[in-house]
Amino acid sequence: MTVTVRECVEQDYVIEQIKQHFKCRVLWCEGRACLEYDLEEELERICDYIKEQFGMELWDVFFTAIESIPEDE
Image (cartoon, rainbow, N blue to C red; front, side):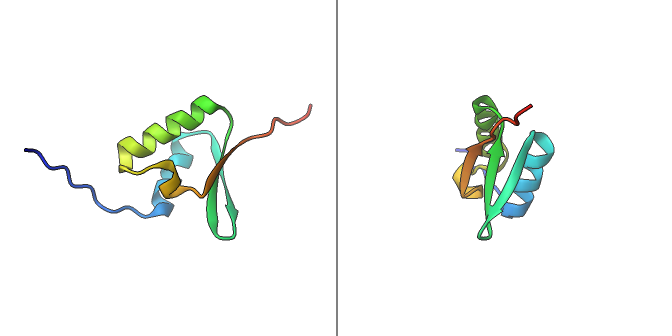
C-alpha cells in the first residue's frame, strides 16, 4: 500500500501559482478571493491544475469564479 502525503499550502501561494500559469485575474470581495477567467475551458484547466498540484478543489481556494465580460470595441 502506497501512501501519498501532501503538505499544507497557503491559499496565497496557490493563487500566485495560478496567476503565473494561467491568463486570469483574482478579484477580492470582503477579503475573499474570486477568480475571473476568460473561457470555460480555461476554468476547467485551472480546476485540474489545482487538483493535480495541490490536492484541493477550486472552492478550497476561491470563494467564487466568474467569466470575464468581453470589452466593447
